[in-house]
Image (cartoon, rainbow, N blue to C red; front, side, top):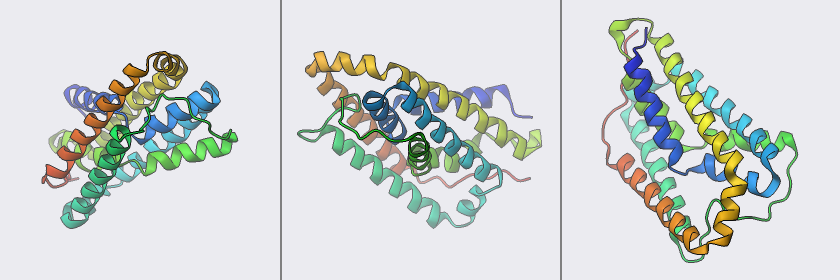
Length: 216
């Protein structure tokens, strides 16, 4: 069975990733500010299903493909790093805006909110990297039931990720109002976000480790 240390480690990794603004948080916050908490939570439901889709794929052993064909694994990591760098540039470029800045968005129906949340999660390179390269490293073959270990670790990631994103959804309106009254702090937040995204992108691009797959 999976160790408590592995569960704590994956929880800490996911908590750190939640605090680094990425596509999921940007979409959820933008939608919550523009359309309200209910819209944000509906979008979060779609993101949660995206997490589950990654978990099913990881548990089914998709990481083995990347271990056997490292070129595909490397390509996905580099594409993800490039995407994060693009998000970093959007945050720090002249005229850039904060994720918490109010935006005029056309109200979407619940089905579209759910679908966009799901799509945003599935295309999120942070989540792909987490499941492809990080989660398998916490699986310990000598403890047996590799699939069960992957499932429990993935559910831990989902619980932390959903809780963290729900916090941003519920606080989005208040944080947006805070930044609206303090444009200087909004600029600081943009630069911090850009720096964090760029740093994460560099770490991904510089990491040349292969996907680790536990034997059944």
